[in-house]
Amino acid sequence: MLIRSGKIQFLFWTAFFSVFLYIWLVAIGLQTFVFPDEKMMEIPQNTIVLMFILYGFMVLAILAGTIVSVMINNRFYTKFFSAALIVALVTLLLTKGMFG
Image 1 (cartoon, rainbow, N blue to C red):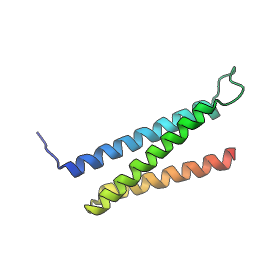
Image 2 (cartoon, rainbow, N blue to C red):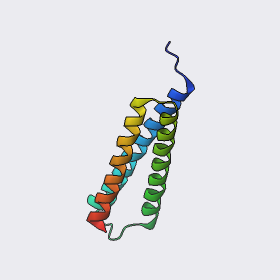
Image 3 (cartoon, helix red, strand yellow):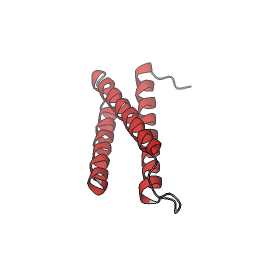
C-alpha cells in the first residue's frame, strides 16, 4: 500500500475539489445561460448566488493549494494550481465579456 504524506494528500484533495467545483460551476453556467429551458423566461436569483458561492469556494481551494505547494516546494502542484487559477480567471473574464 502506498502511503503519502499529509501535505501531498492535502494538495491532491484540494486539486480534486477545485477541479470538481470548476466543472460544477461551468455546468450550472451552461445550463442557465447558454442552454436555458424554454419555459424559463428569467434567470432565478438563487442560481446566481449559488454560482458566486461555488466560485468563492473554488478560488479559496486554489489559493490554499497554491500557498501549500509553494511552501513545501512541490513543482507539480504549483504548476497545476497556477494553471487552474489562470483558467478560472480567463473563464470569468470571458463570461463577463459575453454577458456583461
